[in-house]
Amino acid sequence: MDNVKRWYIYVTTLISLQGVTWAIIALLRNMLLFGNDPETTALQLVVIIVGLPVFLGHWLWGQRLADREAAERHSVARWLYIYATLTAFLMPLLTNLFDLLGTLLRAPGTVQRFQNRYWYLNRDEYTLTDTFVFHLIAILILGVLWFYHQRMTVGADKEITDEEGVGTVRRLYIYLFSATGLTMVSLAVIHLIRWVMIQFGSNVIYNYPYLTDDFVRVLIGLPLWMVFWRWGA
Image (cartoon, rainbow, N blue to C red; front, top):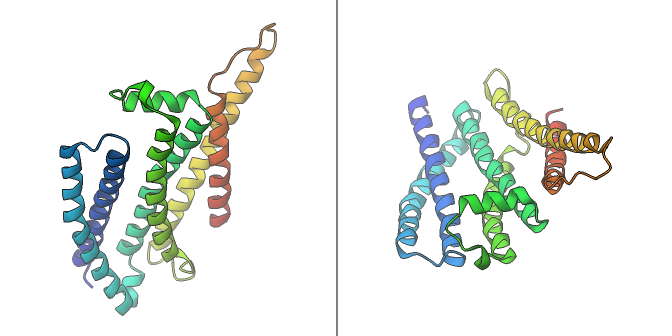
């Protein structure tokens, strides 16, 4: 298959899939939490109705070509789509997981971030259950789609070669999230060491309100770092 057609298929698939995914997430959040505003709901439904056939048509088209041609299965465009999609799903999944755990543990940073983002919500009406549902919707949908695409990489390591340029795409994906996990852990450790050092020479224990945020960083960042680092080793 020529490169122009290949890039057209996967770019269109990537854009339409992201649009449909976030429209579904926003629709469920709107229906369950935000009062089901008619105008917002209509916009989200339009995106889903238009975008879903576009995604399915182009994705199935690409799948048929990949099943028929070995060169297509090993193409840079296909693997760039897969790893770009994995990244686009995993990053917000981690963000929602961080905010979910932070909210459950009453992390000040998480609470402030949510209130700044959704300033129009009445704080008295926003419950812990609402927070849990808000983030859980995104985690479940993004998790399912990430897992679907991640399955395509299983057993493909032996087929990926540096000569084809796909190995570089794979390494960028692996080391991006390995570095993300390490950065999260490093920041938490730095903040903790700074907090401990401040205590020296003081008769009063310094209150560090964001200790819970750093605990969540370690809780998510450490497994993330270890999993992706071992994968790339």
